[in-house]
Amino acid sequence: MTTLVAKILNILQPSIPALLTNPHASPPVRLLLIVLTPTRTVPALNEAEEGKGGIVRSKKSGKYRKGQAVKGKSIFGDDEEKGKGKATDRMIPDELVALKKEVLEKLLKEISEVEWRSMGVHAVGSAAVQLLLELESEDGTSALLDILTDGLISHIRTSSLR
Image 1 (tube, rainbow, N blue to C red):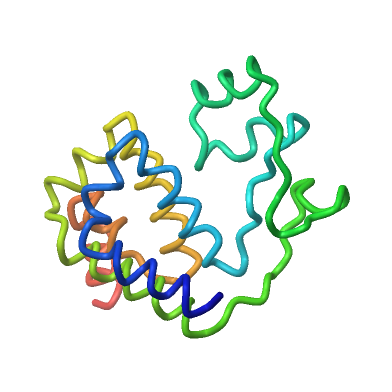
Image 2: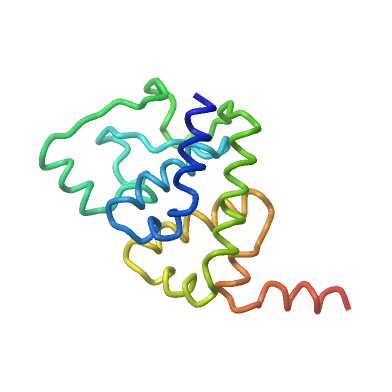
């Protein structure tokens, strides 16, 4: 499975910047990034957890699924106790965690500052930016936040060193 996910990421990597703002491609890419983060809980698909997976599924999609009585089960085999807001660390190979960090670093290099800011107010891209900011904060970095705040973070760091 590790090899398969690594191959998927390597194939998608050049296209990810464009996929983040695509209404049909962005949710699976965001879900893939969540799956590769050991400290993040994977959103549940049942109706009881509606609203907690908003970073992956849009409100429109949730309404459609509710109207169609679409139900699904987690591929992770989560029981009823899990997924109720409890954060649990999942076992993810170090290779995949490193690959996720590499993808995030390449995104920061490939997307310009102006594109990041416009993506932050884009209907689809804003959810991707929000997720990437959360992933960045979990890693203890602030490069994207610095881009979005037009250098405020680096300015505060340099002024506090004086």
